[in-house]
Length: 362
Ligand SMILES: C[S@@+](CC[C@H](N)C(=O)[O-])C[C@H]1O[C@@H](n2cnc3c(N)ncnc32)[C@H](O)[C@@H]1O
Image 1: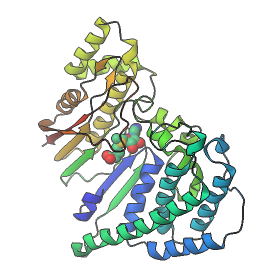
Image 2 (image 1 turned 30 degrees about the horizontal axis):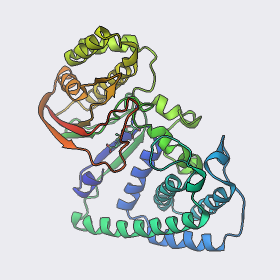
Image 3 (image 1 turned 90 degrees about the vertical axis):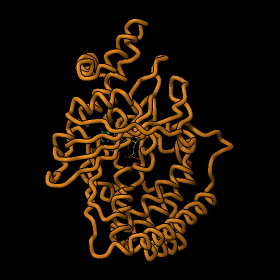
Image 4 (image 1 turned 60 degrees about the vertical axis):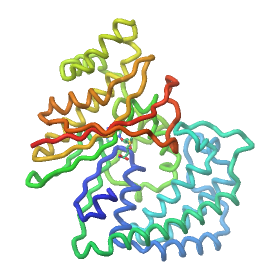
């Protein structure tokens, strides 16, 4: 999104996860001039004056993830943010708030899954306060830097459309008279056994008021810590047999992979892989139907391991592209930086490289 906006290109982004969408909405507000400096000083002022010690949100297991003391402090920050009138500025503040929740809840920040910290590792109120202030300062600084980057863009403010929906159904409202560039980094597989983005976002999302969350997402997605991951690509094994059959007909690479799994008596263990690969195919098919003009696509993927078998997702993507009428141009490989990557997936094998496939539709 940032790369498009800096270049003055219209942008449409889709994610099923309200937190991912909220962060993009915050970026859009930064681009559109939200007054974050004024909002930040108002929040710090309100925080300093707040003598209330209530806990303003409640949900199942709240006290497992936040002690009463830290929940009281997060409630103070929340009340201070709610004092800001401009919704655009509040969205930026919620993005900062979400990061502080990630760093300071009782869930370990070193994993994407919700795992409880050891008692000695819990974060006290003073640290929460200091981290919130330093992240707020840093955000104000980064907003300045971004604004100086776009200062020579002139009057041509690009259009940014951010959609919170399932990419298999989202209405992209695309213009066919324009060249499209699709850039996507899909999940590595089903969220439950690779990176559970839903679990990762759950705690922050429970604190942010509904009216400041993106429009269009279903409340049910926050019903429990797993709902969002279950609704994501590959989140359900319902119909996995039918999905596997359909996918074998589309991708010869996937067909071979399944044959090897069956030959080694591991078919049951690849059900999630089959569901995920088919769901991803459905996503790309839907995008192609919605945006059917000239296009370049850049798909960044990682080859995970399931039941001891490497899933050749990069090659499967090439097959999908050709089934949709596209032409693969090049595959670029790079080693993954270790930072903020889960070092191991559930099968204990590291994903150390990723591939970006560039394809063309003419
Ligand atoms: C590897 S992350 C990529 C994040 C970001 N779009 C990027 O490219 O840096 C994969 C994203 O796919 C999203 N996702 C998973 N299933 C989805 C679905 N059915 N519809 C839309 N987004 C989905 C997840 O919420 C997650 O944010």
